[in-house]
Length: 165
Image 1 (cartoon, rainbow, N blue to C red):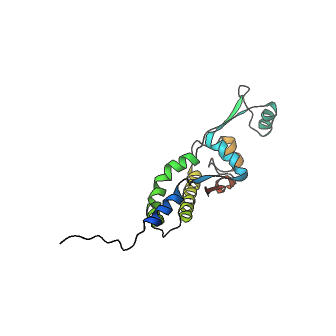
Image 2 (image 1 turned 120 degrees about the vertical axis):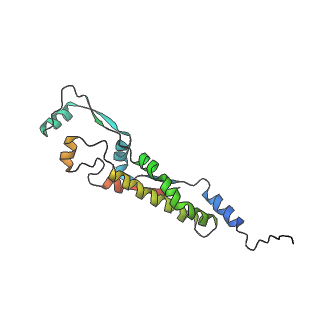
Image 3 (image 1 turned 135 degrees about the horizontal axis):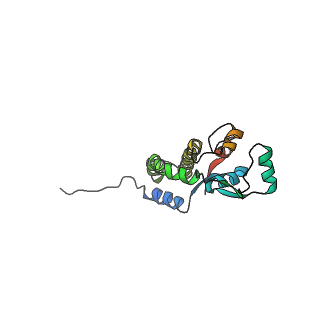
C-alpha cells in the first residue's frame, strides 16, 4: 500500500513572512540617557589627568594624592559586554521555543524581539548589581557608603534598557 502525504495546513507562507520580518532586525541593550556616559566609563575604564584643582580637592577631603600621582584610573568594569557573555546562552534557551511560535505565526515577531530585549536587559542589570571586582577605592567606598563598584544611586543600572531595531 503506498504512503500518501497530504498537506492539511500550509504554514510555509506564514513562516516565510516571519523570517522576512526577522531579517535585518536587532535588539540593542544599552544604558540610556544621562547615564550612558557613566556606563561607558565603567564599561571601558578611564584615565583622568590630575590637575592642581583636583589635587587640592582630594587633599581638602582627606585623601591627599602623592606628588607622583599624575592620573586617576577608573578600572574597566565591563557589565554590558560581560553580562551579555554570561547570560546570552540562557536567553537563547528561554527563547528557542518562542522562535518556533514566531515562525509558526502564533507569536508576533515584534513581541518575540521585545521579549529577548527585556530578558537580556534584566539579566545584564543583575550582572551589574552583582559585580564586585575590581573593587572601588577606599575613598569611593567611604563616600558612597557601600562597596558595590557599580551601585551608588542605582540610576545607571536602572537606565539599562533595550530597543528593537
